[in-house]
Length: 325
Ligand code: SAM
Image (cartoon, rainbow, N blue to C red; front, side, top):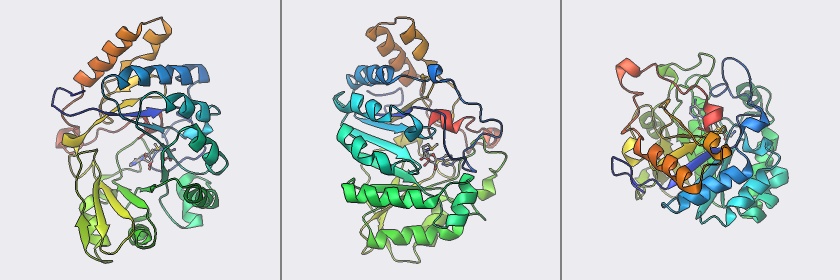
């Protein structure tokens, strides 16, 4: 499946809920929380149907996100229902606080990989950044994921200047001992109570410069799969990923579509264009009609986002939790 700009689209990120048990400073809406009613969210069966239809067009990779996907009571059923859909790579992004008790069930259901968001190693700062979260639960989930054989464990870290950017080195250092993928994500202008300003965003280049204090970095072969530029510090077991949507247009390599928690297809994280797919489904649309809507969403995928254009520099992601990051 190729879009108008000849990019291969084979990755769907699905937000299964806008609810979250944490309120991270860079993600929470300034108003609210004003969550959607359960009836407004996609059901497991609706999600499975969309995935099955799009697999026919080359969809290979599905990531479940949110909100916090683990707050959905039927999260194991959602994963299970996708197991035999033809998707080759089924993963989840989670804050890790509710994961421990479900890892085994999720793996049995077909989960292949996991990304855990962790922005600090300090219990006090973690609680401050997440509005009361308990870092021990996340550490425990990472331990249990490793013991269960989920590999590689990817850790997402969003450095924010003056808040947690002093921990970039410590996170990178983890890759010397562990086969982790530490993914540094530039702080994006989400609707986060006015916290975002461009100077708080630590750029990918700055991150790399900081990390080079540990040792030389080898750029790993780029397989054209998504926006992460991957490096290995000489002698390290793990990998460093740099995701730099703010400082560096990575749109040429964008291979993804997004399905929001309320069932709209969103071709670009930073564009407000969405195509409602849930309402037609609930009104009895056929598979062919759903397929046509999906292909239309692929067709209108923009060439790039406008975060770096001065006129549009104030554009922001209004509802990160609904879209799923
Ligand atoms: N609750 C899950 C979690 O914490 O991973 C999944 C949803 S969260 C929206 C998905 C990812 O988006 C997380 O890795 C988070 O760090 C990232 N994210 C959220 N707001 C962001 C922002 N303003 N800038 C950069 N990344 C952000």
